[in-house]
Image 1 (cartoon, rainbow, N blue to C red):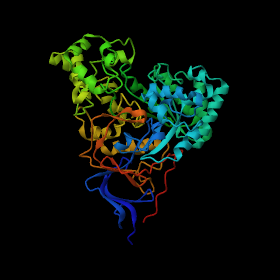
Image 2 (image 1 turned 90 degrees about the horizontal axis):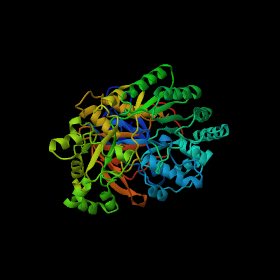
Image 3 (image 1 turned 135 degrees about the vertical axis):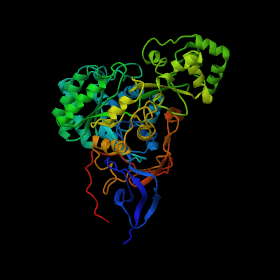
Image 4 (image 1 turned 60 degrees about the vertical axis):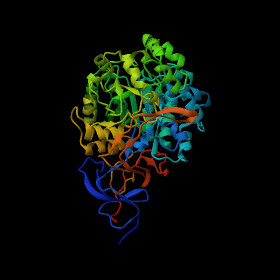
Length: 579
């Protein structure tokens, strides 16, 4: 007998998240869950014709920083524009809970420095209606979103909450400190945190240049916290590290997993300083998983790319005296000044006043920097660097960079592949993605709002790796879908999503793969206090569904906000009885 379904997706090519072959089927949805996959009889209250389109699970992005945005916004963009239906925030050890009132500014400055979210945006946007981590979750629990949101307990906030100034100054934690942190971690997991995150990299600093409070945390401290998760019987560990001594650092992570039994993932990238170290870390990972340890590496499908421009946080002339004199002016006035031949000659004759650090070294790294144009080529060849192009055109790199940034009314951007591009190609990314113990991560959605726009990773992974790449091998569509749906969901214990099967969450994408593409990054001024952020949209997402409701049609929000805070890991559902 015909039955009324809430929604039926008709005749799509299902790539179900398992990695298995695609197949044509209908998908019926009832009460937020997938009810049938196959030939569906009966009509839905709503129907989507997916003939010739892909039907995939919604993407699960496990490395974002929407900790602040989730308190003031209902749309977790840019991620939601890219087929993402679940985000996990609180990565890299930074976040806003637990936090005492006297430490508000301290955590804001840490987030400003580590994740490039401006101080005024956070001070105006954050309501600070919490102190403990469970209070923070409660503050989110009544809010509605266009995606599901999971949170992790951030180590920096935890350390400062327990140790105060001593924690911020990276003093060693005492046994009493460790016991207090372990207790808070246990209670956070019981309240619904998906895990605990920490950072051990010098790249993470406060806005006034101080290293992150967790940089030199002892193994005893980390083990104590991990055992807090073990006591709760819940939560995953997330690590970011410089791996200055890769063997020692991996050994530390392995011992934490062995002691606690909790799963752990760590960020894995290729750096120019140690261009082959990622291979040895993958070898360590293979041995650990062969021994039965639940460990994975989070990898990215393209370079971690820094964008420079006149509207952005930095550009190659940011520390030139002449540019600093006009930096406060509106964009149009700066463009007018930079277009004046006399001013331009003066600017180009100057040298940067930046003495050291990122501003001195990276903003003028012409041999690794590219022009980013409408073609959006994220795997440009070495002969396309600004240094090589300038040489071919008989101009200086500075002249070429300035000319490009002045395009589109001063909105031209330069692209520096900061990580994963030491070889001048994405071959290392292909190898990392192909490893059985890795998952896509590191999109940093919601963060680096004036320098990085990598929340578009899920779309790039589909287009570049399964369809468009010309400089090397590709990946199977079924495998890429599996990696950023089922594999990422499993990594953080969300076993109720990531598959197109009866009983699973009806978090789905309907995709026109032939039309799927990225728009160019652009700047929006829509954060609290009129703050600026980089955004990047996509074309080709016919529909995105969260809990069975269409949240986006052709890239435009429908107004539906079925997403909620996800408290704790979820068990795999039992298949629904055949209808």
